[in-house]
Image (tube, rainbow, N blue to C red):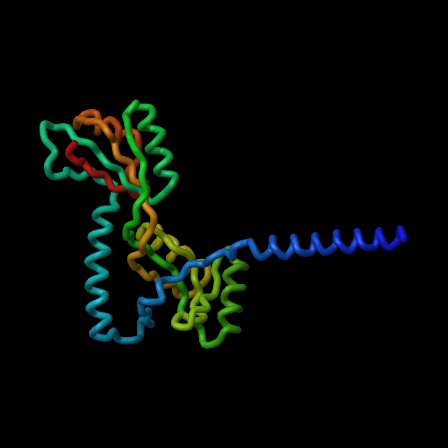
Length: 235
């Protein structure tokens, strides 16, 4: 009877191990890859735009210009600030920028509060036009990998077989990457600029700051390398 008991114990242990393995694998999230929103049409450069596309492109261009003006790290004077003092608010998308700002605020000893919000920001997607077949797209990806260029094939129907090369938040960096990849690979690389809703970090300074102290605070950062929005709000 002992061997029946041991057999029963081993069978239960094997079942529990297998069940745990299945649950662990099911719990692991699949890594998402980025491609532009499916609600937006993307056409080849050789295809003439429709009247509807022209209207959308005009609206998107206006939104892009507005967002770029807001996202550039330049201090703007808010309406209602009086007596030369204000309560600034800083808005940034990058966690690294947020950490740097918070560290400096603590060094200055200024009271502040943090929050989260959603906002639209310009994004620049690099891609290679879809070849005639999936096999050719696979060959291009392998060729890019041999030259240390990361890429993947888009599977969405309206962009099927286009080859994604990455998403950038700054137009200058996207253009630099496009030229580098194009030179290394020999393939024509396109930049698709669009607006994307992203999570933003907000830091509000909860005390009155004068212009001199504010300038001393900003001098601690290299604003040319930070994508932040600065506001001088009335207290």
